[in-house]
Image (cartoon, rainbow, N blue to C red):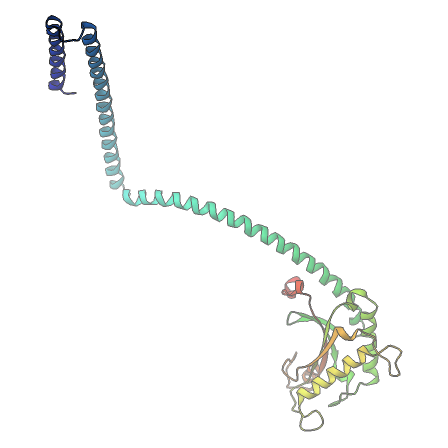
Length: 292
């Protein structure tokens, strides 16, 4: 409250007192007690206003002091090469970054949970793969090669052992090999329950004419011959593998999937082969090479 305002209040108070005295004399209808109550009320309002004015002045003084301090610090920081506006922006961004990091932590926890589930799945697949590999090691003792190719476990049967050049009729030695393979599969419940593709392959030497017409025909017919033998009853006249016919199918690849070059006789011999491909279950459709 300014000095003039304080004077006006005091003058008003005196006037009220005089008015109360006059009204008492003249009979204005207000008693002395009523006028004194009004004076007390205005006095209380005057005190409250003075107190609030003092608090406001104190707050303004503190604000001016703080503004002065901030200005001084800003000037000092700028002399030190610190851009205050940039610093303020970074502080604001830091708050946003903390919120983002909090969200990232949630996502990270979810990713860890998913990774742990995937790791457990891979461990189950690894265990199953090790079991299957152990079972198929019996075939390596027969001189056969078991490996992972094109994300499939493959048992490679040398074509020259199975067939004469350009023919699809099994040799006696080829039948012996297939009987041994079928015995390993048939005598193991897990292997017997799996599905296999019998894939025929040739070298790159062109096949001209004849009943097969080309390498596609020769590879497909050789695969068919192997399947027919593997599913034939064990006690049949020419022998057989006794495997489940619903678990095998034949495919011919011609010379499109070589395992060696085609420049030398030794390389071409490697490409002439029949593969017994162990087909993966849905859960196993991952990169098996990562498990070796």
